[in-house]
Length: 192
Image (cartoon, rainbow, N blue to C red; front, side, top):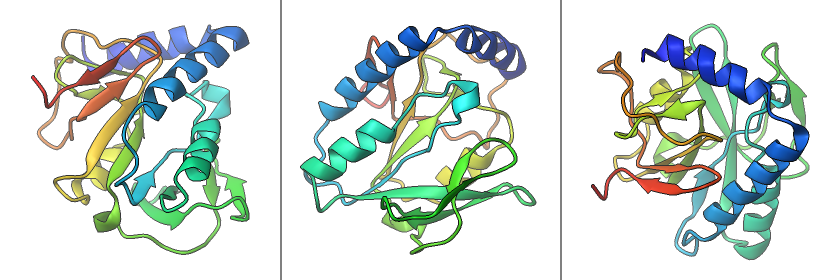
């Protein structure tokens, strides 16, 4: 299927999930993420969920990881709707957040972080394929962002859905994931 077909299909499925289902899926995803080794990670970029789109909720994960690993720095972004770029900031509970026109909660300002510092990026998406290619919302924010990260930065997709076999219209500018975390499984695309 194409990205557009997959986007339409999985947005419809995700919008039909009940609160109980999304809560259970979020708990399962966080459990998988907490099983990763975070001791040597210094900077983790995390997305703040769009509630109205029922994106996976990363708030609890951010709190738990910061409590267990006080040297780990969480990073969040603000989107630039003009050039589809992202600016990154150190996250703290004192950071002033606001909701943008797409329903994304993002910082107004703060301590900037350059992409080259990031060790791990948690990537929101609708669905991925068996090769780590992903379907997001189609604006290319994350592809532009991930292209600026170090080659050894680990890109972990977060989705409520298991991967599909193939996305038929992958572009040369698409940046594939290294791993995918779903409620049921963890997929390591670099291991195969």
